[in-house]
Length: 389
Image (cartoon, rainbow, N blue to C red; front, side):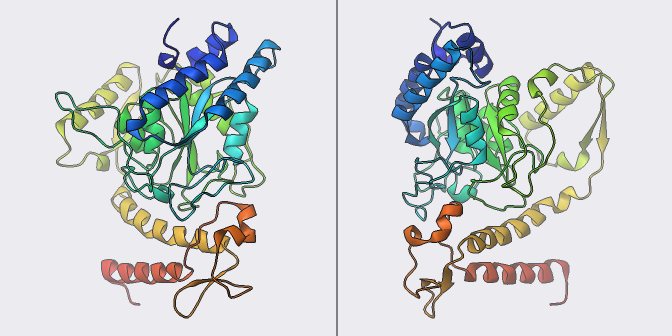
């Protein structure tokens, strides 16, 4: 039998449908691969018993001809997604051993379609990082190495665990989130396929927020087709998320292979920076050449706003993070000595006694942090743009 972990998601789906192997066999192969590759630190929690139970359920549905589009496919879940009765920490000691009593919308849709949970994947703490070195569980290692060197490389972040696990063939696909590049960048670092969907296409309900007006969930897969298959299950309107888009979910897989002949594609010249490494410049040029060869009209465009994008992100994200955490903790206030108190009892605040926890993953974050951040942002704007206070 072919090494089951070497199959793409689409190949595994087809093999399961033909009964060439079972989901339990597929799942066990990935569990063994996970155990052998723990040095990568991609998984922060393995769920073998639950995985095997879900695989057996998938096999039963396949046998009855009632299989969903992801029936029997073993996946990894970024530790920002709430998973019912399975520890969810956002890779921070603040959440400790928090075990949600509810399921995020994204993961509930994956389980609805028959997917199997292998475990929770490492990420930068609260998704705040771009190398997956800030996790309380330690850094994630990229399975790739530069040619001629054995020096460890970072997998990018914040979805470094997702990208590393997919690249190392430890899972057939993974969930990820992207606020300022946290799907796209680690996918690029690990030769996987990552997609940040349009804001609102995938529900954010049940995902620990970084900056809620920028966060968006998306897939990381081994191939474009795999990412498209995952996207169809992850996308969809969710009445629990007021920013969720109420539009039909297309069959993304059917769009693969569509011709780009005659399509006009712009490449912002601002993205081609002086000092760009020759190997990166070569990839840009090759990509443009492939599109031209396929009949696309590739032109350089101007996007002056690109120069301000980084500053805008660094202004928005630090404000949105503490704002989101403090507004969700409705029973927290700050005492005279800076200690966090329960607003009703005036006793020291404890996460496990917070009634708001039932509404989502909570973070015991000092309410004064938001005010301090706003003050810092105002000071930055005044200095940077010579504004009056």
